[in-house]
Image (cartoon, rainbow, N blue to C red; front, side, top):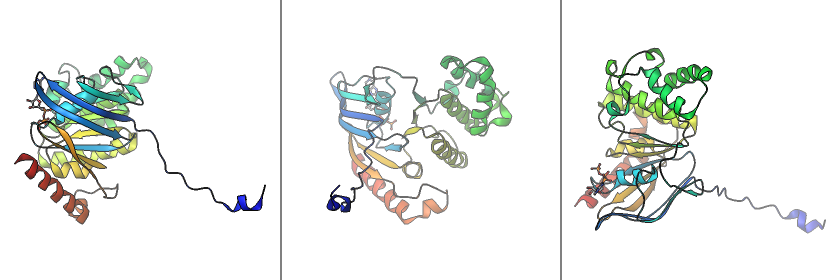
Length: 269
Ligand SMILES: Nc1ncnc2c1ncn2[C@@H]1O[C@H](COP(=O)(O)OP(=O)(O)OP(=O)(O)O)[C@@H](O)[C@H]1O
């Protein structure tokens, strides 16, 4: 081999992994009303994407498109290179209304078991997996409680455990902590970030709470209304290890909070 060739160091190639989720030119109209227009969005596997925007701008509709609960009127939503044609077992949805998402006549363990049964996990394997999932969401000691015997925060943890029992690649969350008090909310935010990092699940999180969007996200997508469209994609430049006190005092956090606040003010005007 000629010497000069050996001297040429290989150029480091950027990592260009294909996105897990892709919205390509997605639009949605209900009758004559255009709700979403020209949504182009790519989400990498393991990414935590928060979605904010003024009330009624189409955040939930965007989530429903990704959940396969709504078909686009234009464009395509795809996952792992395949167009979404309806709800997929690989995509789990955590709703704000935890009380209605759980089966009241089943215990915590029974609620989680349901998702394992649906996936066809053999009975002998279920008990260990249920214990593991309940432990992961801090309900290890409450397996035999019924939802009505649990606080709102515990019920929401249970809904998350049940979704994780689906072994999803993607976790969609629509204002999941909106009905909880501030302390419980902060605790669940930390638990959720921990779970997402440990499991590697891709998270799509809709919220009205701008601080929550930043605290949890790797990126914040801002939707403008009439029709709903992506106005900005803000990268969150905070270190991955977050803390309720110091992260919220970080200058990068405060600057982004300001930018999101300004955006909402302008978009709502
Ligand atoms: N099934 C439907 N038929 C007709 N209009 C709908 C339907 N679902 C939603 N809309 C309208 O689409 C728009 C976007 O609704 P969406 O719930 O997605 O907004 P959002 O940003 O999540 O609102 P919020 O922050 O208040 O929860 C709203 O104007 C709503 O009235």
